[in-house]
Amino acid sequence: MSTTLPTGAKIINGVKTFIPLENNPTVHTHLATALSIQTLAFHDIFTLDPPPTDETDPIWIPQTIGHACGLMAFLHCVLNLDAGAHLARGSDLAKLRDELVSLAPEDRARVVYEALFLEEAHMDAARGGSSGVPGPEEHNGFHFLGFVKGKDGRVWELNGGMPGPLESGVLGDGEDLVSEAGLRLTVGDFLEAAREVEGGGYGGLGVSLVGLVGV
Image (spheres, rainbow, N blue to C red):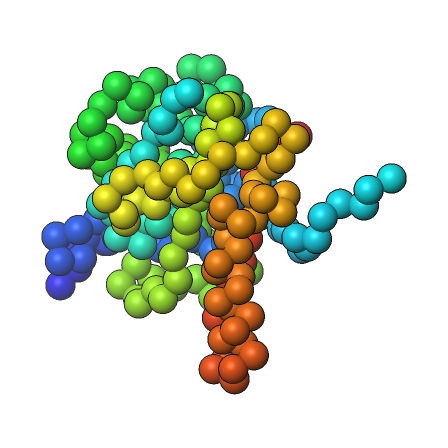
């Protein structure tokens, strides 16, 4: 039994459920633009090879919306990157960040759950993927994680489906998340597992990456 909301989201078994986001830079940039973020864009990460030689705890939000792990990873990145400096002043998202900072995790989850502007922006962006757009009631076998580096160099894995933020290590001033050290602290294990599965003939383990950078 489900009820369709004006945005196209559905209430399924009593839980608001979205169309899953595709891990596609166009989709994420569309979502960012809809939420008044003008100085950031998402890009595909095509190689993790090293380039040629020539303070605070993060904002973490538990996920309580079905199929919204992509939105949660998006929020965890844009709300924490440079302490929210890229959010348009006075925008709904900037106001949301200001509200979330001082709240307990369960209260943050409630605020995000009830934020209609996020629901509208998510549902609009989710319809723009290059693959077939599933309905909110369809099974989704994928999951999003967000990784951020704080100003103090600490690297955080932010997953709304876990009990809290996970500190995975510290990077130096010259190291970013796609440096060799950064990969060890973030997606290295996932990529190695994907290689092993693909090499073992199990049909492959789908892993895709997008990076959030200044424009």
